[in-house]
Length: 157
Picture (cartoon, rainbow, N blue to C red):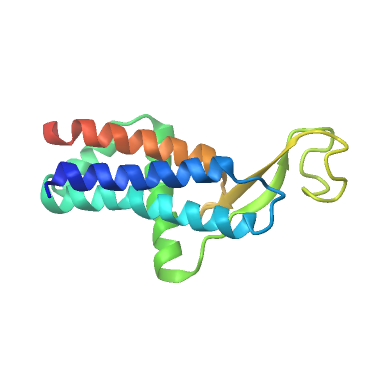
C-alpha cells in the first residue's frame, strides 16, 4: 500500500469513530465507555496521520513550520491532539466526562442533578494539560479537518 492509502485508511478510522460518538446517546447503557473508546480511537488514528507523514514524506522541521503557519485555534488543536494521545497511550487513560452545556443553571449542578428540567444539553469533555476543557465531538471535528488539510498539503511542505 502507498502512503496515500495508509493516510486514507487512518482518516476513515477517525471519521468512523467520530460518527459513532455522534450517534451514541448520553443516557444509553455503556455510553461512557463507548464515547471513551471512540474518542481514543479517533485521537490515535488522527495522530498516526502525522506520524506517517513525518516518517515517510516530510521531516519534523517542515511540519513544525506548517503548524506555525496555521491559525492559533488550529495550533492549539494540534498541540492538544498530541498531548491527549500521548497522555492516553503513555500515562493514563483520557476519560471524557459528562457536563451540561447551556440551560438555566449551566453545569452548576452537574448533568444528572435535575435531569433535563432546566434545559441545556449533556456533552462529553476532556481536560488537557493547561486545564482547558474541550468538548470531544467538536474537538475531534476540528482535528479531523486539520488532518484533511495536512493530507492535502503535505506534498508541498
